[in-house]
Length: 314
Ligand code: SF4
Ligand SMILES: [Zn+2]
Ligand SMILES: [Zn+2]
Image (spheres, rainbow, N blue to C red):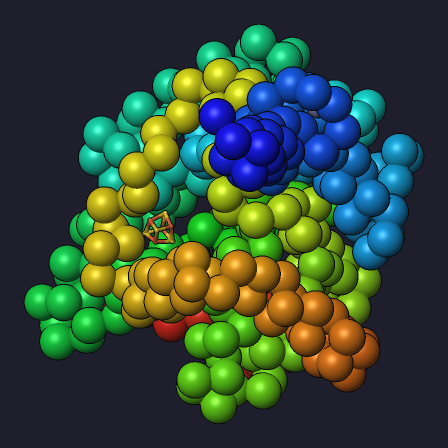
């Protein structure tokens, strides 16, 4: 073998190894250029730093984690407990067939395994209808509001109600960087600056708005990282998407961004940085909204969104 060929093989081997080895040690790469142990530390540290950077909550706060039994909220719950926060799990059962049934079973057993109390509330118990029943009644009346919109409004209402009843200081959700970036692009496409300004790692504020403060500890973690962390921890969660999200408008943004990210890595981080540097500083203080004439909960119009949806069912 000539010197040139040998040098080429050596170079190839070095580049292959440097590609395959962890950035911090000789172990093989698991995710984000790191081995399993370093990736796990990096991910948990990122969540811890996010909590401090955006002042999400402190050690004296009681934190309700909105948990669905999915990978993101399970990762969030697991890390907050591991970091020593006073956590309690809250779940809203929208009753979407076997998907939510299996998630609920997994969530109950996970909470038991990490000794976190779980508080459950359901659509049917509170409203008399499951999510699918609400959307099909609406459809039969010619209203095509998407499942996700109905689900989001009713779920937020129930979480807020439960958090207030339990006297929680803050509700943490499993929203990731991907969720935030998708929402930001959707708001641009709809030319909705008001909603874009409502985004961010903290929304709601008990004193000013009547909503318990809601925070996103996974705000700077991508969905790929969260999936990798969940798999590493061996959580018994489903990785397929909610069956009701098939036609969701958001799904088109997710697919578009994922495809774009493959061709232009770091585009999601860039959009997030743009949001944090240029939009978030413009966010106005939480204003005190009016009250819903029907239920007395905070509302920007005379009827809150929940009552608006429920009134269409009668
Ligand atoms: S994907 Fe839509 S319908 Fe399914 S749980 Fe999420 S918001 Fe609800
Ligand atoms: Zn390593
Ligand atoms: Zn109302």
